[in-house]
Length: 83
Image 1 (cartoon, rainbow, N blue to C red):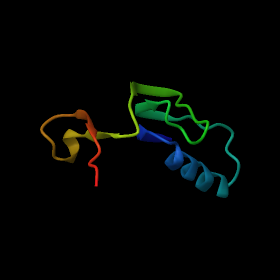
Image 2: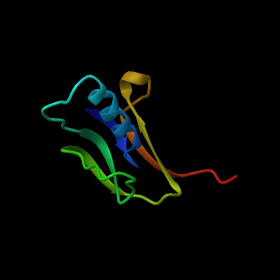
Image 3: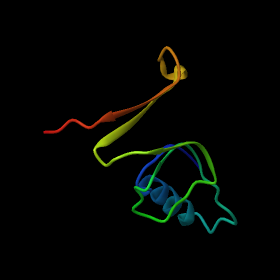
Image 4: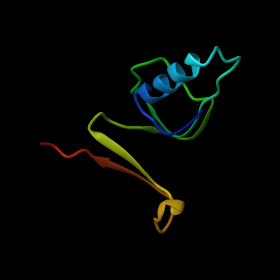
């Protein structure tokens, strides 16, 4: 499986649940571009990781890809807007 940002692990868990609905896989490997350490709801760790970052709950990680129309590939860590 591939994920851009591994945060709480909920999207990976949902993907695994969907995969298991089709049968039990022999092996599942996870590759992520950004691993937000210390924020998991589930005990999920990537097998392959581009970068590990320490972030706070109040921060947001944004990934921009050239293939999506951005000037260059970039990763931004910003503060979430408070209401």
